[in-house]
Length: 160
Image (cartoon, rainbow, N blue to C red; front, side):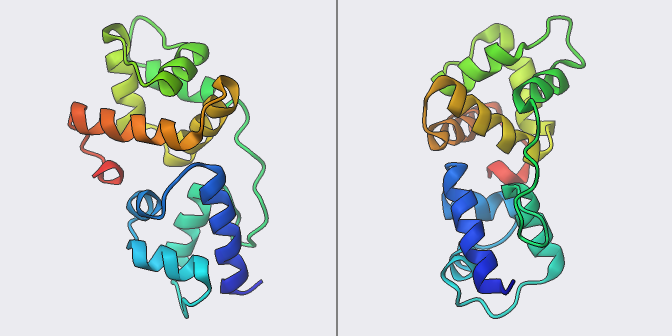
């Protein structure tokens, strides 16, 4: 598989996840121009380290075959966000919060932990699962996460 074919697969996964080129670029540390050039087939070279980070985030393997999806992404994300807190964030609660964009004060610490600390492939899996479960576009959930990260002052570069 060549870089042009990989770029087409990356575009398909990015769109399925509801990510803009700009958001994908920020999440992976690339420029939007690089993402655009990869997706349009004009990029001549992309280092393997950068490519692996990009493919991992969108759920593709280095061979550009689709990875097995993260099973129970919402459950795993809710559990990882609840580790340090007395009251757990349930998977159903996380799905509803992500889809609605309404962040209850009681869940603020857990959602902040999710935004700041959850592995980005797990965040992507939770977004995809919540979008399907709550029947909303994944892009809307990414917008909610971006807004919350800004409002909560997230230190994570992916949200800058």
